[in-house]
Amino acid sequence: MPTLGIIGSGNIGSAVARLAVAADMFVVIANSRGPETLQDLVAELGPLAQAGTVQEAAERGDAVVLSIPLKAVPDLPEGLLADKLVLDTSNYYPFRDGRIEELVDNTVTSSELVQRRLDTPRYVKAFNNIMAAHIPALARPAGAADRTALPIAGDDAQAKAEAAEIIGRLGFDTVDAGPLAESWRFEPETPVYGRIYFEDPNVPDELLAESDPGPTPAVDIKAALDAATRVNVAERRF
Ligand SMILES: NC(=O)c1ccc[n+]([C@@H]2O[C@H](COP(=O)([O-])OP(=O)(O)OC[C@H]3O[C@@H](n4cnc5c(N)ncnc54)[C@H](OP(=O)(O)O)[C@@H]3O)[C@@H](O)[C@H]2O)c1
Image (cartoon, rainbow, N blue to C red):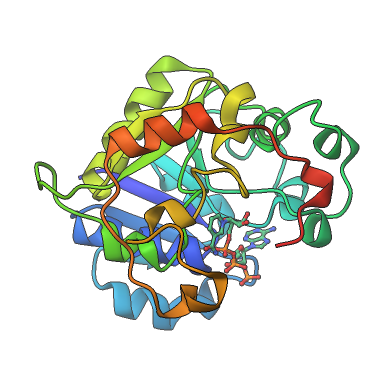
């Protein structure tokens, strides 16, 4: 049985952990404060899950989901994930992560920046375009007629194929959005981000909180990726 290391136990990390144990995967999950602060979460996740240090989650995972704020990536130990298949959920928000020139002027994508910092070739951007609450709501077993798709991007074809297999096991189809340089296509404010997973993607902002998610097939994700235009990251507010 494969083990998924998960670094970051917040909204997205814990949602992915729930899918992983439901898919009979071992989980080693870590946060910044240490395993002792994760006892309630691992009790809820059950016997397949353990809390660990960041180092343990990295070492014991056959693949590692990295789900921490972008600004925290430089705090990770040098070389931590160099040999790992990494699925990174991060997005860049200048108000949270600080002004990073290469990102605000669109010289590189946030995933290119993280990949460079981690110095790992086996890096895939995934789970960054869906709201945390929609992850358990839309996950379906393989073969279900109402499977939802997630876009993924990466520069290593084999790593992308392995990531797609893991995401498939977790409950989603995948759409290859191309290399990391194209990953802006499914970042915030694009048509592939967030709203696409609502039953009515055009629901007014004030009704979003009470609106239902709706299954979103690969064909819809592909069309939205094609329609995406690059946004001005410097103006990103939420
Ligand atoms: N929330 C969403 O719906 C959503 C959707 C798509 C993408 N994203 C992106 O996914 C990433 C995670 O989002 P989130 O909402 O899950 O964040 P979150 O709820 O704020 O959780 C962040 C997690 O990262 C951990 N962390 C922070 N610095 C760390 C470090 N140096 N080492 C280890 N762990 C560290 C935190 O640990 P402590 O709690 O111990 O500090 C916490 O468990 C972000 O980049 C976000 O923009 C979020």
